[in-house]
Length: 533
Image (cartoon, rainbow, N blue to C red; front, top):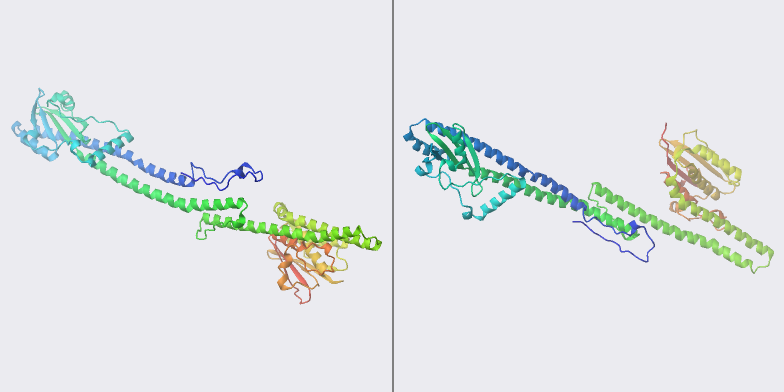
């Protein structure tokens, strides 16, 4: 039993794929999860079925006990008969035969039978003809033979009354006559497969005493035990199968649904696939379902973000390209040197803008992958910001804007991260603050470690950020600059890159109003503080 689920067909027009991609989602037809659950549970029942082997040893033990009892009875009866007068022996033998349910026979020295209790008293047992019994007895005997064959039980000699009842017709009696005082017993099977036990002993003055008895209760006891064990096994088997089906329903079926949904996501159908979350389950399968659902939703968001980013990139590239094309086309027809110089300035500005845009697009595109592979090390943000501001001052990046830094104590602002990326994040925020500051304005930078976090604050004296725009400014290609600004220096990706770097370091960036109530923006970076030694 097993599943064979093919979800896709080979598409000759599709791009070349690996062998693993071309094969459909399937479960082995030999060992599916349901088959394994059933096999394990039924194997346990099969182990329980081994108790039938116990029945064979139980029957053997009961037969041995009854044989010992028959040997003890024949000695006791022989002693009692030897103790009474010969004329009283028939009556005593008949009475003892009725009590024990046995048939007593005595043979003389010549082998002739001199006493048979069935001739002087009612028969104590009956050898039944199997052909005259109902079908239930035939079924019981068939099961007896089946289980004897399964357990490898030894075959038992059939009991048949001799045509001429003499001592020599009974092997056990002959053996007892050859060794007076020795008890010889024998176990045979009646026509209906019930045991017949016989025992013989030769006593002086009495002759050879032979007892026979059809002990049907042994068969009844063994069959009753077998029936009880069989009912237990059947009950356990039914419960095991039901539990197996229940486990298959609660384990295999949800896993199958999750596997099909994951396969459809792999085929690129993330938007149209609803991965079941199984909210009512609190076990490992429920955790797996919710993890897969969250993963598929994250993948869907990532796909949507990539598509939106591609659309934004194409849109942002069109503007400088259109301006560049217009300027190049105009240069072919314009003869005025002053106008040509202006067109060259436009071309130069558009090229710079395109270069900056492409550089930022490339950086934000590979940012996630590089952060996942980056080797994170302890970084002192105070020293990092100090070196960053010194380099900006040397290059004249701040213009006439003053940048003040409240330097923290050494190693009080330690974080775990990629130093180059953290510098890029802080520099993007400083660039933003400088670009929005008024002439001769002041940008204040501070860093402080508080308990298990490090806070980096950047304040400017610009127009600030309205509350309804404080989330939008971190979106890619968002810009709120006037048309007269030097837009070629800003791609609209600086704050988006800064936020991506903060997210990659398990941190946050938010923008607030200045705490002193003056005009301007207050950007606050929160990063986890490195563990203290």
